[in-house]
Image (cartoon, rainbow, N blue to C red; front, top):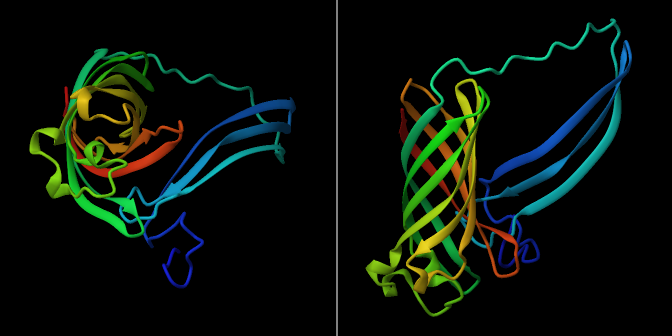
Amino acid sequence: QYHRQKNFDNRAISSAVNFAFDLGTSIHYRIAPQLQVELNGGLYHVSNGSLKMPNGGLNVLYASLGSCFFFEKQGDYIRPNYTLNEKRWHISSHVSFGYRELGYFDYVTQFWVANMSINPTFSVNKLYEIGVGVDGFYDATQSLLYETKLRVRDVKEREKYHLALGLYQRFNLGKLFVPFGIYRYIAPISVIKEKTYIRFGLGYQFHKILYTGLFFKGTINKKQQLQSDFMECSIGIRF
């Protein structure tokens, strides 16, 4: 864990609480009744969601090749049925709140952020939905980026309101779901310094029309790298 005097070189992890995600894929191929080979690969990321700076985070690209032996003969593979028998169009909306630090070493500022999202989607099957994402933010980040002399109090109130549009996807796993979206800010262009960001996380549909979740927002910076903006706690409604 980062410490300014005792562990200055570790600028990847600076807090006791961190968030991690593993985005990967796995391919299994049976070569005998009791033997199959497996190919796995993906990206593993851990950071604190900008709760505390510095927040360099850790990114690990991994791949593995292996085999699996079964003591009993395996039956034929049965393809699951993901056909949808209910309505295909949905609209969901949620409000979110988060907290972040911005800056490095001698310049660090803290502030709260808020967001409202509206997502009309079309269900392709039981597992996958695709649609449009509309985000509205109350966030001082864009005005403060690369401005080491500014503080939150220096940002004009009208510069904290932003609007973004993007591609929204939702992967359903029973009552759990994983949203993933790629967005671009569309207003106000004059204060936006990093226009593209992604959002993903884990949600829980605890009621027929109500859900909650913990979602991550990360911006693509000038070096085309994904940098953590903040984690947000959300409560929403879905029809």
